[in-house]
Amino acid sequence: MTKTRSKSMRARRAARRRKTAVAHRDGHRAPAAVYQAPAGSRADLEHQLRRVRGRQAPPGRIKRALWWCMAAFTLAGAAATGTFTVSAAGWAGTPGVLTAQECRQESNGKGGHSTVCSGVFVSDDGRSTDPQASMVWHGGEAGDSVRVRTVAPDGYQQQGADEVGLLVTLTGIFTLAGTVCGFTGLSRTGQDRLASHLPDRAFARYVNWQN
Image (cartoon, rainbow, N blue to C red; front, side):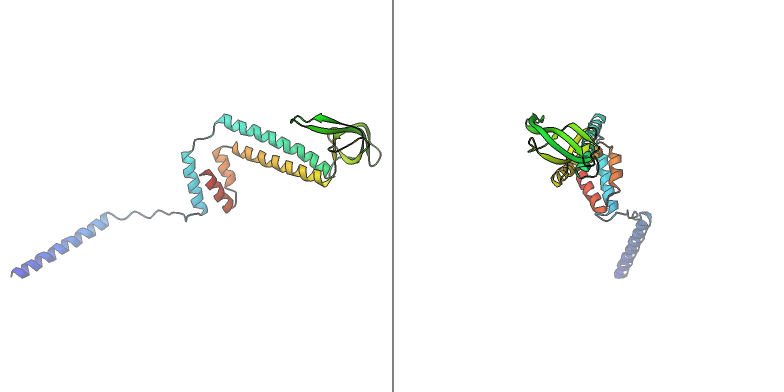
């Protein structure tokens, strides 16, 4: 009799535990799983960028204005060197020959000196002559002649592969510097909008740089 009563009590206790477990499960359902983008995916990178931006203070107006001024200066330099580049490459300007009558050393403003030669310029078609032509001519001497092209407004630029290579390099440096300065001068939102158009790999590098 005692054994039967003990088994009955254990059965009732087990039944109560099952009911309690079911009620607890029904009343406290697990929250729905939150979607997480795969690590390294575009969505994950955008989430990382938003989180980083939330911790960063926006750049000051004065700082942004300075970046824009630097961008304007370097892009103006790119435009100037680009003008000389197209002349040196033979794409613009009037072609002709400059014959030096006098060459002298002048300060270049950088603590050094440059050779400046002046003489007579005669265009290839003979229609244009300038008896007061002058230009920087490294290694030039009186009596030497060199092929040149006119550069606005009244300058001259040697034609040759060496000059073209140097000017293309300078133009590229100025353009890159101006682009970087202009991008840095944008607001955080503007930077992110431009960066969002980059390919995935480049965008990942941008996010890592911001981190």
